[in-house]
Amino acid sequence: MTLLILGLLLAPKIPPDLVEIYRAANRAWAPYVAPVDEVKWCEEDCPEVMQEKELLGLCRPRPEGITIYLRYSGTYGRALGFSREEGLRLTMIHELGHALGLDDSNVPGSIMNPDWRQPVALGPTEGDFQALAKINTHYPHPVFDKSPR
Ligand SMILES: [Zn+2]
Image (cartoon, rainbow, N blue to C red):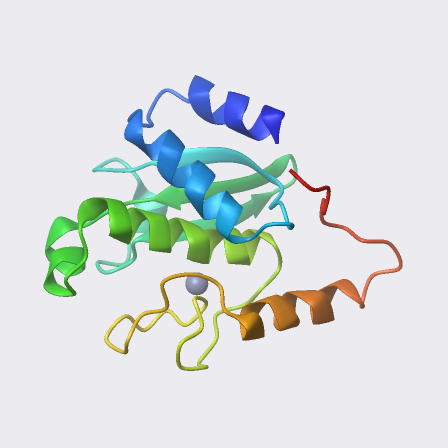
């Protein structure tokens, strides 16, 4: 956890307020900790995210670790009634869910449901944690850090 925060603080493209948003999004998944080693804030030069107009975030596994790209498109988020901070936090929670191994979901109310036209979950639900617990039973050893913080 310390390393994740340290890596985030050292990343050059992240505005300072994103650090607290990242911490809050991480706490939402406690006791799970996503193995993210890089978070990139994208305003304009983020082709991976910019390819899709309405994409607010992206979780990309690389051989060295997981990168989360985050973009907050003011027009899209504001149209749904979220402040910039709320939109970023919810997007980050969703991407951390991917980093933990969850796929997009079509379950209404799941934070992993990418359709923000429906009522949007404000954090992981019991169902999201159950899905996560299910994933973990597929591995002989827990692959995700569950150390309490
Ligand atoms: Zn997704």
